Length: 219
Image 1 (cartoon, rainbow, N blue to C red):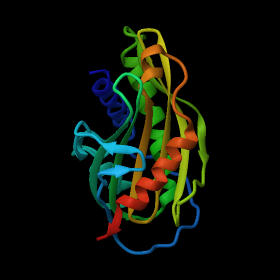
Image 2: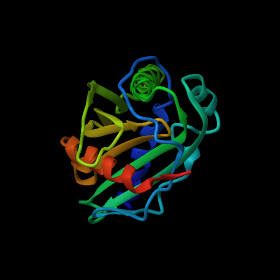
Image 3: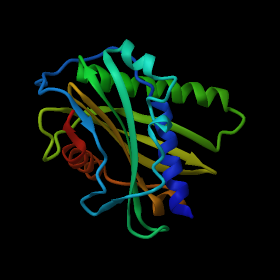
């Protein structure tokens, strides 16, 4: 039961990542069109049936125009959730992605984080009468290069979920190349229940690199 709640919480964070902003740009070779097909497993993590569909993520039906405006042409959304361990003590990782034509990968990453921060602050202002439930980004996105990340850019930043006075760290990593874009959230269920702590950013970034390698196939 708690496991399902944690997945929903992680998926909910995805709604903040409506693409926007204008930053960039690092060099990434365009190796042709690819699509994303979430695999049944990534290392020790198994795909869950609670992952929702593409419309639950950053490119729901109302967000495709926003993606195209920043240079992601003809975007298609995908989403999946992955679990490891028992319901009350395990870990869950949520994936929201899209594929299409991405002119400037780093701009898409920086824009995603910037827009997420903007949306979180806007919602916090609108929900000021319920301060016990909140999401915010902490610090700034930092470039990472986990093993297996090939010809792509990835940045990670910590998010913080507050619920009934308990605060849980949620590492968030985004990769981008010229055809695929993935947002990956890590959720430690035990930490979420108790408050405090959370998954290590290195674990989430490594998972994201492995997921990209497995999910990215020629279109």
